[in-house]
Length: 365
Image (cartoon, rainbow, N blue to C red; front, top):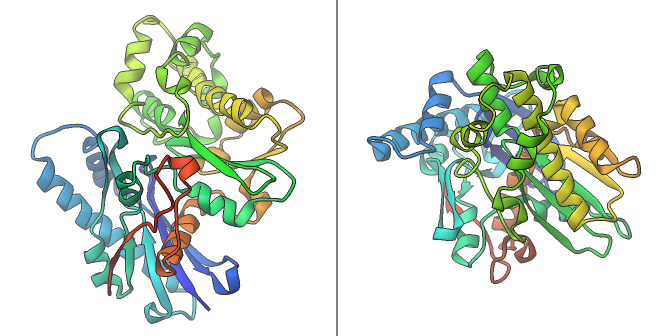
């Protein structure tokens, strides 16, 4: 066996997803998984660190220590029901928590303490996957298309894997073994923030609140005019652009908009920006497979399907044998595996880097 653990805590700031994977003989067999939610105070602190604030350096370092402890707990929870021990795992691949992503300025920041994680779990840790790609002139994101291509490309057919977390991104897997991909725009980030403000909930379960509203077409049209959507690929984005201040600027023209109608509009913003990107860049797509939290929002999934039309299959990645909430953790296990093999983990056609690069930094146990 060739065992790796992948850990992912995404833009939605809900918690840590982890998966144990066997990469023996070129396959990727998921063997166990776990999820550890963020405590409310840590989630609030990580959200606050997305923007400039007092005493950032110390607060980020303390948050990184707490994250490492949660990552270690997730590793322990993954291994507990199995016969595997820490010594059986070759490495843990961990993304860290993105708090700033500014590739146009030459940096990205994923809060993490991989040295502490290696100490706590007694396993080699591979982290800091984005920096090498950015150093080579790339966006540092999205990184999952290389993994998607390796495992899910199908000869002669074009398919898209869409990850809808806080931010949405797509991997376009062409039938000629070529792949492209980029961030399409907001996924759940604005919907989550809006329902938290008005109903005190972390997310809109199955899109139920959005379903009670009506999309405000002038508001949707105005939001879709943001220059990001018209940028050519490669491109990536995050909370640095799509945040509540961005939304409030657009809402200034609609001061009396019912909150549920705004939620419905935000859902359509995610659906249309993603569908528009697929239509423009992968017009021959036969199927779209969705992972991330968005895959569990049936109202959003139906909206994407309507915009793509009846000739395009829209399904969750369950149809590919991978639960939607495990796909990204699986990808970071694969990136750790690629690091240990000293093989490239990026796709220059996706990130814009000067060439293929081995991604990550090693923190030995």
